[in-house]
Amino acid sequence: MHVIEWDSSYELGIQTIDNHHRKLIELLNTSYDLLLHSTDKEGMQFVLYELAEYADYHFGAEEYLMNTVSYKGLLPHVNKHNSFKDQLAVLMKDYLSSSPHVNADIILFLSDWLKKHILKDDLKFAVYLSKNKYPSTAAPEIAVSLQTIFI
Ligand SMILES: [Fe+2]
Image 1 (cartoon, rainbow, N blue to C red):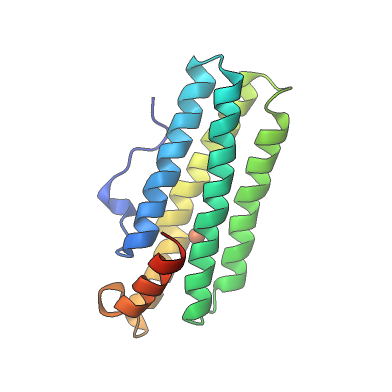
Image 2 (image 1 turned 90 degrees about the horizontal axis):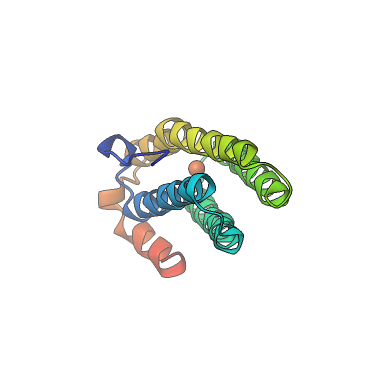
């Protein structure tokens, strides 16, 4: 069962970031599936570590891009990313000692957080890019520099 189904409303038009969001959604769906249907603790730990590492990597990429274009909403956006990372850290810390029910709730929370974050906060940044001389399609140099650093 998927906690998030990708659909076109999540497309921001920034290809690298869109690809990252797809991957994050895939990892959240895999985590949720494993929590509900698997007793493979090592496998679950592996996926949670992958999710945490990928979230760090993705948030770093977004923050780098925001910094590059002097986005004024950078700091509050970073704080929001940190709240996701904090919740994920709680999930990972509790994983071995908590009931699957509690963990599944946190995955649902993280998924809900990500959906709202993409559709509100990240979309706001995409609109900023398109309004302020950095439309993603017309700023290949930014996309290229982003892809060079964050494949
Ligand atoms: Fe973000």
